[in-house]
Image: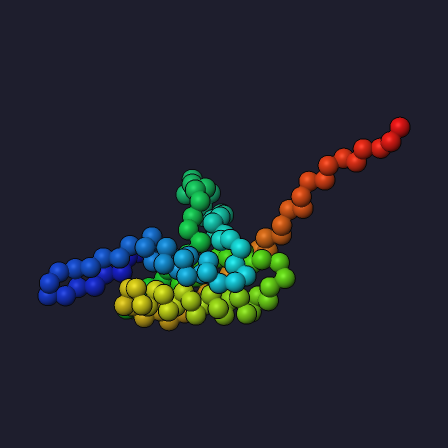
Length: 129
C-alpha cells in the first residue's frame, strides 16, 4: 500500500517502506523501547504462502484518506508499558503526519516482548591447591 497524492502538477507516491521508516525512527527515540519485533504476525498464513521472510515491525491500514498504523515493539525491563506506549503513539502520529501530510487516525502499539539483558559470562574461579 502506498500513499498517493494527486494534484494538477502531478502525482506524489510515498511507499509503505518510507512510512515504516518514519514510524520506526520516531519510536526508537522513546525511552523504554529496546528493539522492534520483525517476525511474521500470522505464522499460519505466512507458511501457506511459502515465505518466512522477516517483515517490517510497522503495519499500515488505509481508512479512506486516513491511516491506521500498528507498530510492534520490545520494551526494556523496568519500564511501564502504558507510559512507553503512549509516548510511542504520540511520537509516531506526529512524525508521520508532519512528514507525509496525511492524517493518522490511530497508532496501535503492540508490545511483543521484553528485552532482558543477558548476564555477563562468569569466569570460573580459581581455587587454591
